[in-house]
Image (cartoon, rainbow, N blue to C red):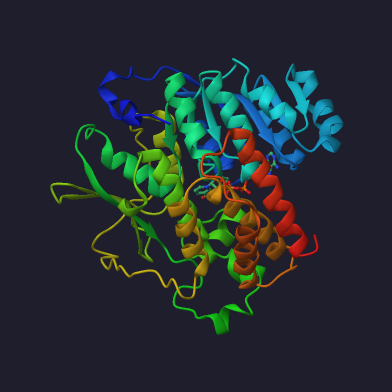
Length: 401
Ligand code: NAD
Ligand code: MG
């Protein structure tokens, strides 16, 4: 499939911002609540037209009463009556169930989708939003990991922008603005290393949910926190970067940078390296993606070179954190492999979070699932869905879910 996504880096062609109407998918999560903080601080730039959440109806209702969107979706249908009772008197349309996400994504009450649902569940609504011409601020990396070729081709066809929210990809995007015709040699994704940096398998075999979920630099949702602790997150991000920036796998490098001050780098073919830096705070990539090409002034804490001058860099420990190697193999192999890897990983992480399997056993579940599900070199969208389902079922049987 052919697509050239460089047009969206040509910031000069884009009009200055008027009020953007945001459809926030996954409003109760870590990215969702930080997105609302950004919107709350910039009422002349953004309004909220749509909110969705899976199960936290209490927070969803509170958010809806504050921001008064036109539409709210609660995907866990058992909560529908409670949400409807609370919001109908305010004239807010309330929908429920998984299919309602796609219905909402195709509505014309919003111009910009903040894709902040976690996991495979974010893919279908994002495709629907692209199909109906909305620009996407993309936090949900799994969307590109599962079906990056389909998603990017559809976006190019519809002329919509996909602006990354993931901090590393936001950093690369920011380094590329103004560089439309300058060839990239490689990108360097930085990784904090997670809470188990420097640890070996004999330690990791015993770690539990509470250890793994406590990330040293970022406060995030449960799934991405576990992915960060296994380095799977960085593998998913390599795949995400391939699709966002149209790169060959060999152009994507990972370096461990425990301070999380350099958010990632681009090395151009003239050997110049550009980095984007700052204190770790997701509100910055969130607001950059929403306001692009504008930068919004804010009072977030500033990085002080005099106080914390040491920035260090190391290669990843592939031998200990084997999930990263599995993701790189899937990236190199292509086809439906990243989709299978992602599905197996979602089940493995779920199993670990629910104390059904150990930290190192997550890798075994992924490895066995990859070996089991048939490889397809050029999958259709339906084949991606089928591969996801098959991988998910197989991984679940491995851990008796
Ligand atoms: P989270 O778990 O805190 O929130 C997830 C949101 O998705 C919630 O609103 C939840 O209601 C909703 N959701 C969960 N399952 C759903 C389902 N089956 N159907 C519909 N909605 C569902 O997650 P998060 O940390 O905010 O991450 C969201 C996405 O952003 C992930 O893809 C993650 O990889 C990415 N991301 C997050 C961060 C971060 O700092 N949290 C950074 C970079 C990228
Ligand atoms: Mg990231």
